[in-house]
Image (cartoon, rainbow, N blue to C red):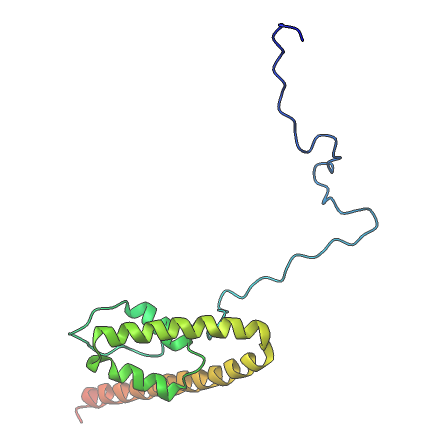
Amino acid sequence: MSDQAQPPVPPQDPNAGTPQPPAGDSGQPVGQTPVPPATPVDPNARQGQLSTRDGHLFVIPPHPNTQFDEENFLILLEGSISLTIEEKKRVIEAIPRLSIEQINELISIFQEEKQKFAELESEFADDVAKLKAEREKEIVSIEMKQEEAGEDAEAKAEAEALKKQLGL
């Protein structure tokens, strides 16, 4: 062996010797159809929960004895697949009487439900889709009723204003 210092060996490129596709080439072998990109995910679709909406269906009543993340609570509650609209209303109505421990337990239950339904969606997609569609119909029905009630209240207010103008 010689006592001469060996020149440093440059690091090896792991891709050296591997042909690289020309710039702009998809790397797809000639004659094969490129795989289309995955269909875009619906931004309102949420695994394990109902779709999001503009605004909320429910308003949380005052609850002076507790403080919690109302937005997160409403997202979880309104997104619940297992609860009917009537059950969700009862939960909302009960909030002023609940302790923070009970509210935290509800949040935990809603999060667990979301996770379990997400798992079920991959295994029983059709069944979960049917249940989701059923719950979505309930929501649409409630939204329509709320819209009608708002229109009725608006019409009554206009009628009252007109009566006042006429001095009746």
